[in-house]
Amino acid sequence: MRVPYFPLVVLASVLCLSRSYTLRSSVSWVVSSNDVVEEADLSEEEVAPALLVDGAGLWKQAYPASNVLGDGVESPRELAEPETDNVAQLSSSRLFSYRLEKVQQAGSSSGPPPHQEKARTARYIAHNSDWGHLATISTQDKIKGLPFGNIFSVSDGPGDNSTGVVYFYVTPMDNTVSDLRSNPFASLTFSEAEGEFCRKMVYDPEDPRCARLTLTGKMVDVAPEELVFAKEAMFSRHPVMAKWPVGHNWFFMKLELIQVWLQDWVGGISLIPLEDYFKATPF
Image (cartoon, rainbow, N blue to C red; front, top):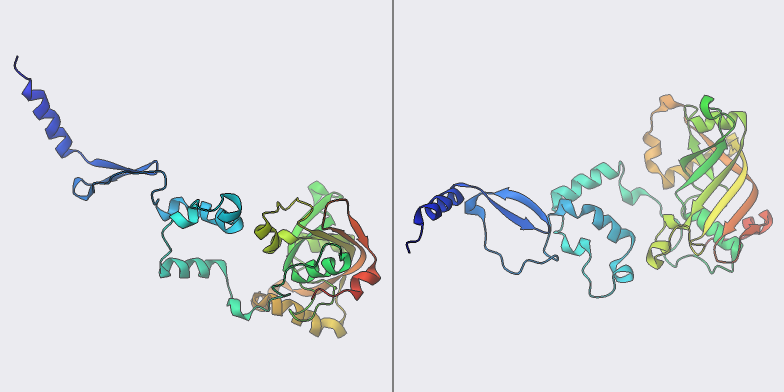
């Protein structure tokens, strides 16, 4: 019986003229036939293009692989190729508008105080937080009289000088400032998840062991005799503010405390007396 050679010849010709595909980690892209490289034993652990694992790399940064995946398991960041110098420089220029070494770092590397030290823990969080969530009663037409939250950069003093009094640098153009002109009372919330402690311990932000602090009080303009310190407090921690457009009429405010609310462990919350709060130290 003769073998039908003609169909085989036609099929071989088509394959030679066509372009080939290479499969890498379930993602395929077109390559020319000259660029096809013989690869053996492809597995799911094969190196993937850096763009495909960038999001996973961020996950690895927030939750270390040794805590989540277990020892010996490669994380997405470890599988990705390192960034080139040009990519790193481009990413840095987009993320930051000022040189990082100019920022005064608050607190120490020793970590948060023991959870039993409530007042000290509250001061630690207030001092080591660079931003917080400020809740006001809205004056916006569609949500007038309802709660409205906004993010603000804050400081209770330069890195080596904590006061417990939280300062703000704001503009009248902000909806929150309009709210405060109508009703000056507000609540400012911080989460220990902003720092490294909860990430290292793999605590969810809602885990009571990942401390949260809410300061409630009255927002007031900073008095003239206090402006020098308020400026030092804010600009030492947020140097880019010095370059913000003067046409926005920026000015300093601070929160005069009425209540200090803290949850830093299981078993309920703590209302810290103001006297204890101001007597404590975050260092």
